[in-house]
Image (tube, rainbow, N blue to C red; front, side, top):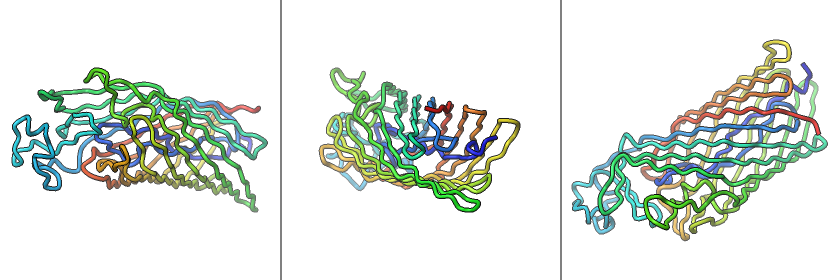
Length: 351
C-alpha cells in the first residue's frame, strides 16, 4: 500500500448545539476538526452522529439556594409550599414553562452531516460542513400551565448552521518520524433554522438552545498536531470558540476543546488498512448569556474516554468513534452527558 495511505488524522466530533430546555451541556456549540485518513487528500464525506443525555446530579425536594416560593410563581399557582416542592424546577428564558426533573427524563440529538474537504498544493486545506439536526427531549412531567402534563416529548428538526474552515499544513520530516502541524480557523455562519416555532404556544418559538441553527456567527481558532512513526502515532489538538449574540438575544458562552489519542495502523489484507485508536476528549465552556444575563444552568467541564476504528480500502474510508464521559462538572443541576457515537464514510479524490 502506498505510504500516503499510512497517514491518520483523528476525527474530533463536529459538535453542534447540545440542545435541551435545561441548557444542560458543557459545550453548546462545539469546535470541530476536519477528518482525513489519507495525508492531505481532498474528500467528500457523509457522517451520522448521536449524543445522549439522562439523569441529574440530584433530585432535591426543596427549592435551590433556599429561594422562596415568591421566586416560583407557577409553583404558587399550583398550590405548592416551600416544603413540598416535587423537585427543583427550572424556567428557561422567558418561556413560562417548568420541568419536574425525574429519572425518566432523557434527551437525544442526532445529526446527519455532509462534509467536503479540498487540499490545495499540499499546503492549504479548506473544509465545509452542512448538518441536518434531529433533536428529541422527553420529560416525565412538564408543567405547562394552567395544569401540568405528563409524558411530554419535544421534537425539533431542521438545518443547522453552515461551517467553513481553513488550515495551513506544515510538514516536518525527521529520519524516521514525521510531524504535521496545522494551525487554522473555522467560522460558523448563521444559515440554519434558528426560529422554529413551538407547538405548545401559538406564535412562540422554541427555546434558542433547542433550535437547529443559532442565528449567530462563531469564530474558532484552532491547531492540530500529529506525530507519526512507521505505523503508529499520536494526534492532539485544541480550539477556542467565540460566538456573537444570536436569535432571541441568546449568546453561547466561550468554549474550549482539546483531544489527544494514540493510534496504530496495520494492513489486514491487500489494499485494506485498519487503524484502531484510543484517547481522551475534553470540552468546557462559560455560561451562556440571554439578554446579557448569565444563565446559571449552562456551561461546565467534561472529559470523555474515547475509542475508535478507521478502515480504509483504496480511496474509501469508514470511521467509527465512541465516547463515554468519565468526569463532568456542569453548572447547576443540569441533565448529564451520556455516550456519543459518530459514524462516517468518506471518499477521497485528486483535484
